[in-house]
Image (cartoon, rainbow, N blue to C red):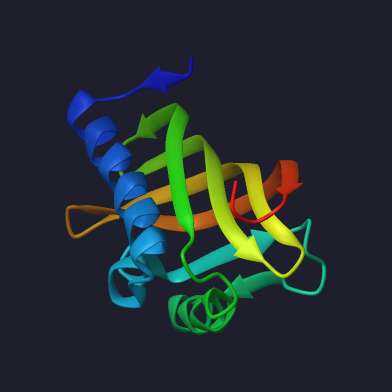
Length: 142
Protein backbone atom coordinates (compact mmCIF):
# COMPACT_ATOMS: atom_id res chain seq x y z
CA UNK A 1 0.00 0.00 0.00
CA UNK A 2 1.51 3.36 -0.97
CA UNK A 3 0.48 5.14 2.25
CA UNK A 4 0.27 3.23 5.50
CA UNK A 5 0.89 3.83 9.17
CA UNK A 6 -0.15 6.60 11.54
CA UNK A 7 -1.17 9.86 9.84
CA UNK A 8 0.90 11.83 12.35
CA UNK A 9 4.07 9.99 11.27
CA UNK A 10 3.24 10.30 7.58
CA UNK A 11 2.78 14.07 8.03
CA UNK A 12 6.11 14.31 9.87
CA UNK A 13 7.81 12.41 7.02
CA UNK A 14 6.29 14.77 4.45
CA UNK A 15 7.64 17.67 6.50
CA UNK A 16 11.08 16.00 6.58
CA UNK A 17 11.04 15.83 2.78
CA UNK A 18 9.82 19.42 2.48
CA UNK A 19 12.48 20.64 4.93
CA UNK A 20 15.13 18.88 2.83
CA UNK A 21 13.86 20.51 -0.40
CA UNK A 22 13.63 23.95 1.20
CA UNK A 23 17.17 23.66 2.55
CA UNK A 24 18.49 22.73 -0.92
CA UNK A 25 16.83 25.76 -2.49
CA UNK A 26 18.15 28.04 0.27
CA UNK A 27 21.57 26.31 0.19
CA UNK A 28 21.30 25.92 3.97
CA UNK A 29 23.78 23.23 5.00
CA UNK A 30 22.75 23.23 8.67
CA UNK A 31 19.04 22.69 7.93
CA UNK A 32 19.83 20.17 5.18
CA UNK A 33 22.26 18.25 7.36
CA UNK A 34 19.72 18.09 10.20
CA UNK A 35 17.48 15.89 8.01
CA UNK A 36 20.02 13.02 8.09
CA UNK A 37 20.61 10.37 10.76
CA UNK A 38 24.14 10.31 12.15
CA UNK A 39 24.88 6.93 10.52
CA UNK A 40 23.05 7.66 7.25
CA UNK A 41 24.10 6.77 3.75
CA UNK A 42 23.42 8.63 0.49
CA UNK A 43 23.70 6.66 -2.75
CA UNK A 44 23.91 8.25 -6.19
CA UNK A 45 24.27 5.25 -8.55
CA UNK A 46 23.81 7.40 -11.66
CA UNK A 47 26.93 9.30 -10.60
CA UNK A 48 29.58 6.56 -10.24
CA UNK A 49 32.23 9.17 -9.54
CA UNK A 50 30.35 9.90 -6.30
CA UNK A 51 28.81 6.51 -5.48
CA UNK A 52 27.69 6.12 -1.86
CA UNK A 53 28.65 8.42 0.99
CA UNK A 54 28.43 7.16 4.59
CA UNK A 55 27.82 9.19 7.74
CA UNK A 56 26.07 12.53 8.17
CA UNK A 57 29.29 14.56 8.47
CA UNK A 58 30.70 13.13 5.22
CA UNK A 59 27.34 13.53 3.45
CA UNK A 60 27.08 17.19 4.45
CA UNK A 61 30.71 17.91 3.51
CA UNK A 62 30.18 16.36 0.07
CA UNK A 63 26.92 18.29 -0.42
CA UNK A 64 28.48 21.63 0.59
CA UNK A 65 31.20 21.18 -2.05
CA UNK A 66 28.71 20.06 -4.70
CA UNK A 67 26.34 22.97 -4.08
CA UNK A 68 29.07 25.44 -5.05
CA UNK A 69 28.28 24.39 -8.65
CA UNK A 70 24.51 25.02 -8.40
CA UNK A 71 23.96 28.72 -7.67
CA UNK A 72 20.32 29.70 -7.85
CA UNK A 73 19.00 26.14 -7.77
CA UNK A 74 15.27 25.60 -7.31
CA UNK A 75 14.56 22.15 -5.82
CA UNK A 76 11.14 20.61 -5.22
CA UNK A 77 10.18 17.17 -3.89
CA UNK A 78 6.92 15.38 -3.23
CA UNK A 79 6.15 11.93 -1.84
CA UNK A 80 4.58 9.13 -3.86
CA UNK A 81 4.60 6.54 -1.08
CA UNK A 82 5.10 6.59 2.68
CA UNK A 83 4.95 3.32 4.62
CA UNK A 84 5.47 3.59 8.38
CA UNK A 85 6.30 0.57 10.53
CA UNK A 86 6.94 1.66 14.11
CA UNK A 87 10.11 3.77 14.24
CA UNK A 88 11.12 2.99 10.65
CA UNK A 89 9.59 4.02 7.35
CA UNK A 90 10.08 3.65 3.62
CA UNK A 91 9.37 6.61 1.38
CA UNK A 92 9.48 7.07 -2.40
CA UNK A 93 9.54 10.63 -3.70
CA UNK A 94 10.02 12.50 -6.94
CA UNK A 95 12.09 15.62 -7.50
CA UNK A 96 12.24 18.50 -9.93
CA UNK A 97 15.14 20.91 -10.01
CA UNK A 98 16.15 23.83 -12.18
CA UNK A 99 19.64 25.32 -12.22
CA UNK A 100 22.08 27.12 -14.49
CA UNK A 101 25.04 25.16 -15.84
CA UNK A 102 27.66 26.27 -18.36
CA UNK A 103 25.80 24.48 -21.21
CA UNK A 104 22.41 26.04 -20.38
CA UNK A 105 19.52 25.74 -17.97
CA UNK A 106 19.05 22.22 -16.64
CA UNK A 107 15.65 20.89 -15.66
CA UNK A 108 16.11 17.55 -13.94
CA UNK A 109 13.56 15.08 -12.65
CA UNK A 110 14.51 12.28 -10.29
CA UNK A 111 13.40 9.56 -7.93
CA UNK A 112 14.43 8.96 -4.33
CA UNK A 113 13.98 5.64 -2.53
CA UNK A 114 14.37 6.32 1.19
CA UNK A 115 14.60 4.53 4.47
CA UNK A 116 13.78 6.74 7.42
CA UNK A 117 14.17 6.28 11.16
CA UNK A 118 12.61 8.01 14.14
CA UNK A 119 15.31 9.17 16.59
CA UNK A 120 14.27 10.85 19.82
CA UNK A 121 10.82 11.50 18.35
CA UNK A 122 12.15 13.04 15.07
CA UNK A 123 12.10 11.43 11.65
CA UNK A 124 15.42 11.43 9.77
CA UNK A 125 16.78 10.00 6.56
CA UNK A 126 18.70 6.79 7.26
CA UNK A 127 19.31 5.94 3.61
CA UNK A 128 18.57 7.82 0.40
CA UNK A 129 19.12 6.44 -3.10
CA UNK A 130 18.68 8.85 -6.00
CA UNK A 131 18.08 7.95 -9.65
CA UNK A 132 17.76 10.29 -12.62
CA UNK A 133 14.51 10.07 -14.57
CA UNK A 134 14.81 12.90 -17.09
CA UNK A 135 17.07 15.83 -17.94
CA UNK A 136 16.19 18.73 -20.21
CA UNK A 137 18.79 21.33 -21.17
CA UNK A 138 17.72 24.61 -22.69
CA UNK A 139 19.28 27.96 -23.48
CA UNK A 140 19.71 30.43 -20.64
CA UNK A 141 17.26 33.27 -20.37
CA UNK A 142 14.08 31.35 -21.22
